[in-house]
Amino acid sequence: NAGVTQTPKFRILKIGQSMTLQCTQDMNHNYMYWYRQDPGMGLKLIYYSVGAGITDKGEVPNGYNVSRSTTEDFPLRLELAAPSQTSVYFCASRYTALGDEQFFGPGTRLTVL
Amino acid sequence: KNEVEQSPQNLTAQEGEFITINCSYSVGISALHWLQQHPGGGIVSLFMLSSGKKKHGRLIATINIQEKHSSLHITASHPRDSAVYICAVQNTGTASKLTFGTGTRLQVTL
Image (cartoon, rainbow over the protein chains, first blue to last red):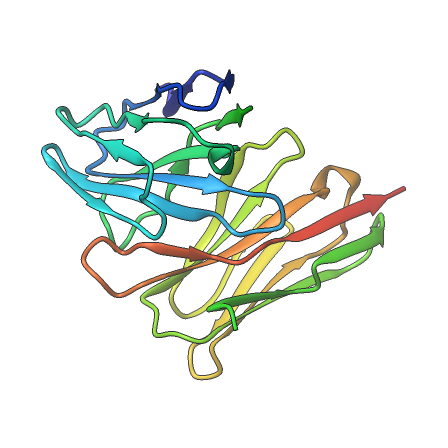
């Protein structure tokens, strides 16, 4: 199993550009999450999904959108990138909500200039 | 006040020392997670516990639900243990979302 994979690893965007961060897991996990990690701060939940076709907002959803058309994929879309979205983004997944650990992807380091 | 507080924020130890990292939380939880973030940035799950104590190799995690407190212990520390250790609490909602502490940066020297 590859686990949770994310692409790209690094990206520099200009203000106002858009991009999609890709996340794929091959563990048949129902639950998937997108987090951002800023220096000196704990990870913050952006969006999450409890299964294909179901998504919901986390703590910091503004400026982002997600979709979950398959169990495996959970892309994160940034529209009109802003410097405040400079961060490291982690995707994570788990099989069930209650009893399982979360598996994290390797992260995407995004800089918006 | 943050829902999850970790202490210390930074910790330097010599190889072989016994290390303790503390986590206090202020909300009701269904479980608590300890995670390790390597210098390269990757995050791995170390423990998930809802009561008592768990042990894996040189790592021990304990939780006291009544006191809303958890500790992560590393016995016989080694330079390869150098990392950021993150405590996260799992809420009781349907998606069991996690709320994260800011992490404890551990440096183990020879």
